[in-house]
Image 1 (cartoon, one colour):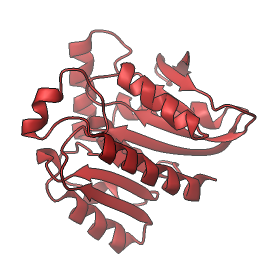
Image 2: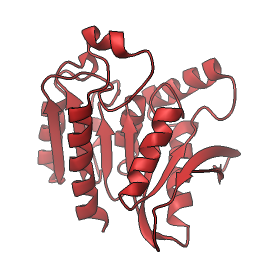
Image 3: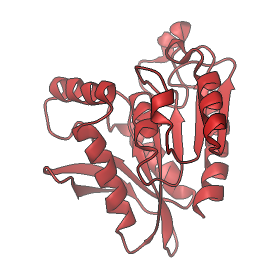
Image 4: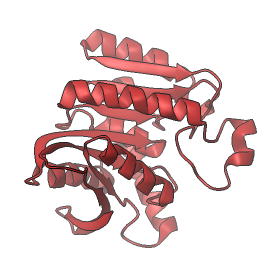
Length: 229
């Protein structure tokens, strides 16, 4: 894994980059972290995506220092659906697309707040989007206009995403957007993230589930292979 610097137009931020084995060029995937930031779990996910044959880049949305300040700023951008965080994600897209070892096609994936951002930026030049249990205030319909194909993974025990599958399906059907939306029946929020300390939180609909995580990645990679290769 290599940490790289991404020019954002305002300044620069750091990001974790993983490159597949072999000889490119490859499609790219921007991976947007959850509220816990660019930690070990996010870096493992970045490697997992690269192992499937994609250039994988995880921008650090908290790179400007002062975690509490950064968290407030990032969640503020999520609520406004615009701002520096959106610019950072689009800068990561441009960074990947501009590499000699990238085909130019780039997808976006995200978890929790990162899943919300994945939906927000999906109309902005991405070939596909993979939101995992997205956190998004103000409804989903408004972010689907002009969106790219979407593969979404949800948990039925997730209190953040009650009704999200239905809303996504209805909105994407109306717009004729290809999609794969699935809700796993026995899991909740963060089921694809291995975050220390979340084990006891399963009683309130939080926590990792290996079966649901593996199956969701199987679906995501099949969807990406269709729309990026």
